[in-house]
Length: 376
Image (cartoon, rainbow, N blue to C red):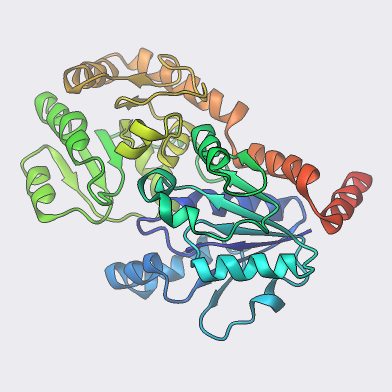
């Protein structure tokens, strides 16, 4: 089948974590013999910022790291009708321009044979409800929400015909342990400052415990304001800026532990939704401690796959334990890796996607699924 994905960006992961997951999904679909095309705006915010921050070379890295993925850009005058005419499945991400969201729905209503799915991986459904409520989703065959609490919100508000939970996951072709690399530093945290949704949490759970314990290590990410950079300069952690996601497994391998610091809107209003980094870190076999987070859907085994800290003092104790008890740290890492491989890979999510398509897919999709089943 042919899958067309409308994304904010596949090429750029600058402050755009959803690109990680979508790359893995398309790689998995291609490996199963499907055709994929990603469409992204030529002037997208993430793409433009990556170019300004890192230069053309950073954009070029994508093609070398993902040579089998096809990406096309669109701007004014682009023929979207032609782009989706022969598609079996069209997936439209939540960051897509509302006018284009409506246009694609109109094409589906007007006789498009593709299955049209809307994909939400953000907290705007609670933090900017009007923006989601105003989207024209009536003609979409289904909505994919990246957490059960988000799915329930869509259902309560009557957004979309049918809503399915479709969590993010790790691309284990890329995110895997590197036992040949010996850790040389204690702690790494990889995450963006964003709009300050976790400013207080980063101080309490990252900077203060690292300073108290004198942990060596690094912070990677973008959009850190000057005041945050000044605080980091006074800590034992080095700020190392943007890092291409494909290089993250090697960075994890050079550190003994990492942490999960969710954004406040997810903790307070959308429990059960971890950041993509939690999936990716556990897939790399690095011990992880999480700031307060309610694993409402039991995605992981708390205390076995990762450790949880209720406050900054407890975070310091958890990090001290992982630093000093190497056998225990190795056990936590093994458990987390096991859970990812059993439940949370991009292959698992493609299986889930195909099951959703079996329920909601158009005749073109049903024909494609039947042909695939017959061939197998």
